[in-house]
Structure formats: structure tokens, C-alpha cells
Image 1 (tube, one colour):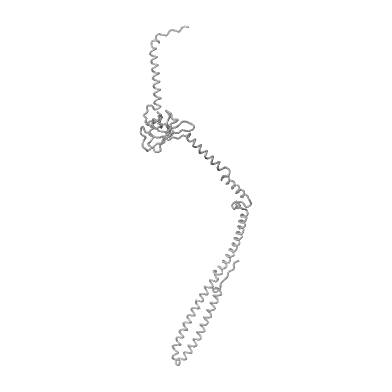
Image 2: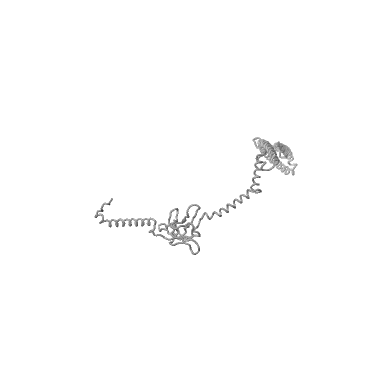
Length: 332
């Protein structure tokens, strides 16, 4: 079956159309590549940061360095320095370099599961900005490197546990003592026997407590009786009409009698003085001497009467207020 002949008009513009299509295709490819490069920050200004670590295992070219979980830089080159340490060259975009400061800390973390991570930490954003081309030491945190030390520590711990729980260890002795203590707690005398360690000692303590309770009861009874006795004594002594009141009245009477006795004695002194004056001329005033003697006898009788009243008052005072006796109070 033969093909249909092609129109000469179509053949005439075929080369131009093919060239235009190829040109458009190349332009689209170049634009796409340029956009991809722009999106990945190839044309964005950057600054270089070099991290130095003892071991850069797990670090690959193109891996990101993160700050607060956001990528701010990318590893461009990994090399070995002259002193045998790894050098990680990182490009950081200028717009993201503001998060890095002179005192920033960089870590290289490697976990048991997952890839290695480069992280940056800045504690003070007011510090001086990180200069271009700066070199900093990366702190390495490798969990796999801690495994041997952890295993050794665990082995030492297990050995210590075995020694603690082994025969003749202090833990077993403590458990045995605890069992003995709990057995005594469930005994007849409970916690008292557990603390003293001997049932006989516990019985002695209980007996002593009972005697103490009895003694306290007796002391309480004696205290109540003493309180009643003191109350009665206070009523007899301090109440109205009691010993204190009667004594105060007797003292007042005694003062009055003493005043009268002083007055009588002054009169006696005056009469005696008069007698001495008039005795020189007994013949002239004999009559007056007889009268004075009569007055002296009557005055003497009055003084004796006052003295008897005073003596009676003192006896009454001694009877109401036993000053010269020792009072004995018998307690029950």
C-alpha cells in the first residue's frame, strides 16, 4: 500500500518549524534548570563555615545543617586536615547566617537509628555575627561510642547486685532480721516485743506501765483531796468572818486598847510628877496629897483594867490565829 504524496507547501516550512520546536524545547529546559538552581539557592549569596571534628563518619556532601529544626546550610566538601582531623565545609545563605554568632555551638550527632545530623545552637542572639570563613569545633555525640562504656557499667552493676544478693551478704542478713522483726510484731505483745526483742522484757514493761497507771491514779486522788483541803482552808482564812477578818478586827481593838493604855500611862506620869512636886511641902498640902493618892489609886485600877482587857484580847487573838502553834495538816 503506497503513501499519499506530501504537499509541497508543507515541505517548504518543515525546517523552520523543526528549528523553532527545538529552540523552544531547549529554552524550556534551560529555564527549568535555572529555576531549580535558583530554588536550591545556587545563585543566592552565601558565606563559608568550616567545622572540625575528630570523626566525620556519617557526614555526606549535600547534607543539611539545621538550626531550631530548619536547614540553614549545606555541606559542600569534606576533607582531612594535616593533623588528621576531619574538616566539614558548609555554605550558609546570607539571609540565614544571622542566626549564627561567634559563641554558637555546633554538634555532630549520630544515633543508633537514623542518619547523622549537624545542628547549630545559639544562646545569645545579641552576640557578634559569625564572620565569613570561620572555623569552629564540632562537638560529637555518638550513641554507638557510648555502648561499650554502658555495657561495662551494666556489667559492674550486675556484679554488685550479685554480691549484694549472694549468700552471706548484708542484704540477706537484713531480710532475715526483717522477717524476725515482723514475726515478733505478730506476737503476743506486738511492737513492744519487736522493739525489746524478748517477751519477758515486754511483760516487765507492761507491768511497770500498769504500776505507773495505779500510782498516777493515787496521785490524782491525793491531788483532788489536797485541792478540797486547800479550798476549805482558803474559805476559813480568807472569806468574810474568817481568821484573817477576825485577826484584822482584833488588831484594830488591840491598837485602840494600846492607845488607851498610853493615855493612862501619861496621866500616871503627870500625877507622879505632881506628887514629886508637892511632896516637898507635905505639911502644907497634905490634904491635896491625900486626894492625889486617892486619884492615883483609881487611876491605877483603870490601868490594871486596861491591861487585863489587853491580855484578854491577846489571848483571843492567839486562839483565833495560832501564831505560837505549829499546825499539822494530815493528807489522806
